[in-house]
Length: 395
Image 1 (cartoon, rainbow, N blue to C red):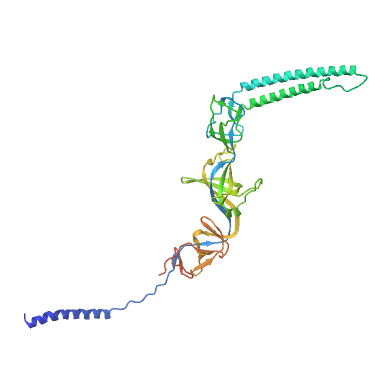
Image 2 (image 1 turned 120 degrees about the vertical axis):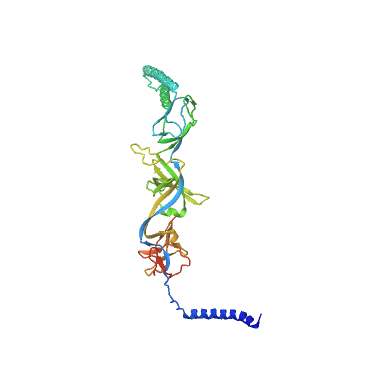
């Protein structure tokens, strides 16, 4: 290869590179510089809620298991064979006060009445005989002792015999009353409106005195023992033991699938003691007619059955002139974020009156119509620019 060819191979790439560099520089210097655009900060997107003073009833929430106010064991007072049973005298059967439950064979007790009547007749005959003897003895004594006029001996005048005869009459009458009472006790009736919780009796069975054959629970009212923190009692009206005052109203709730069943109740008393394990006070909420048995009342609601585990909302005292905000809006140090008229964030100290499950009740710190920020903002600071959700973005 000649020297001319070698020079051409070396110079040609250099020329191409220099030409490209020159073209690039020409393009850079000939382009128009872009205009600088300054964007305004639109602010963090938030949702707000306007708050105003209101009178807010305190709602104390608890849970408990439904029980009965009354419960009794059905125990025969006389023994004998069971001859009759009420058709509904089975577990789950419902009875009104005085309804027939079962009957014990009464033949022996009817015979006892007849024997008692015979005993009375004989005792009255003996009494009449002694009374006649006493009259004759008095006449004879007066005839024989006219001069001395001394008081005769009680035995002479049959006074002890009269007392004995009269006592026999009284005893026979008492025996008749006892026999009639035993006969009445062969028929057993419901002591109060009740539900049969258990029964161990059937036709032909021999029952003995003092042995329980069934257990019944009252249906006049159901009671729910609700454990509550001690600090919650200040909001409630709880009648003292023996007082007739009305306690706080309550709403008993039970979720069944997609449906929530409700019953109206009232606080009737406290148990007067604090649970040693949970340090909880225990109040009793009563619900009248849980099985809808009141005469003439249509069963528009479901039965509140014994053993149900329910939620209880007790309506306590009313807090006047307070603000209610979602609990999630309460920030560290008992502060709340608000949005001022210029759209800036303000950290507002507040006075907390009460914390509920979903709501915080505040006393001070706001003006009427203040806008409370509901949205959580990362890195929030006093004066931060805010923008309401739904507003158009500034161009």
